[in-house]
Image 1 (cartoon, one colour):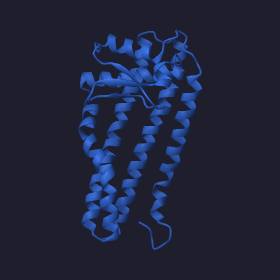
Image 2 (image 1 turned 90 degrees about the vertical axis):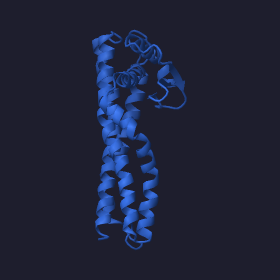
Image 3 (image 1 turned 120 degrees about the horizontal axis):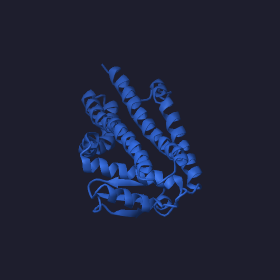
Image 4 (image 1 turned 180 degrees about the vertical axis):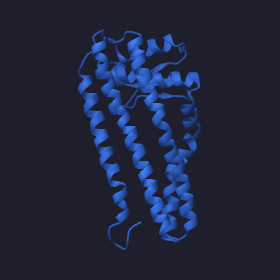
Length: 229
């Protein structure tokens, strides 16, 4: 994918995606840190908000566990467990309750059979394999000038792109649910809804950046593949 020992001009296709990804990561970190220092008026911790939201929605059997790392919060649909990082689990900040509510949104999606989540979970194994194996086929195909290997690699990479695309509605919907859950259950006063939205918007931008990067990388691969015909 390089021209001799020179620069590959198709790299320009993914440069905007790299810039956006860097900005998105910086934005989510700065926004999270900003509101991690702002206590919510009612003093709820992330754990308390998560536990109450799950119970209100009939998900008493879904445990809320502490997980190591920073911004590692997630809902595991296979084990039906909601995991919160220490910054979120024990904190009564606006950032922590926003993130906790968002992860509850995923648990509720799962319990309701939300179609985009079901599709994402179904293609996740293929996407995971595709994202790892694709480059082995693509690189080997370019080295040995075997276009069939390149095609297999691109097909595998397409599965990873599809996963990123279907992730967007899943994440946006979880964030919308989170705000509604915080407001509807009076976890925050009206004036604190805005900061919670800001945290979730910043987090959503990272998914947009990842999807854009995956799509542009696929466009680049298709461009390189076209030059082999």
